[in-house]
Image 1 (tube, rainbow, N blue to C red):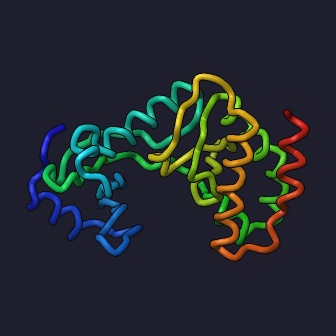
Image 2 (image 1 turned 90 degrees about the horizontal axis):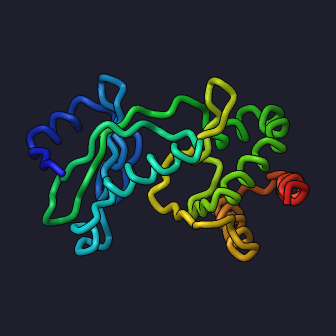
Length: 199
């Protein structure tokens, strides 16, 4: 991967809007041309120097697309600081509304989507996709009434449909997300009942 200069990064940060950040700095920046800059600061720099997280993110997007799963379109991957294993990518955002937003702002619409959401999660599992960050903020409803995934760095691809153990573990990630957000009125039984009907 090529190396982006510190000056270019500063230009991006100065001109763009920071959408996401943590204690280590910006994570997602919206640039004036509509492109998103996603920055990866690895907690395992030695491993990331061999397989940078930006490259993994782009590879995951490509594999998901080949399986018929909608994702953002990655335009470029590069190093921001190779010594510190800070990589990044530029991508066209996937148009859509997060299910998180629908749940809080349009609850009736979200409830109507539950059977399709269960079928979508079932499709992921049957395709051997184990998405540890499975939660409402990472699933979008697209303008053409489909679903898509974002923020899938930690996804794993299995050669066969997920086992019952992995399915339970994956749903547990969603439960943990709901607990962290202190969401108490989520229609959990309805979602899992709809999923079980497909199994």
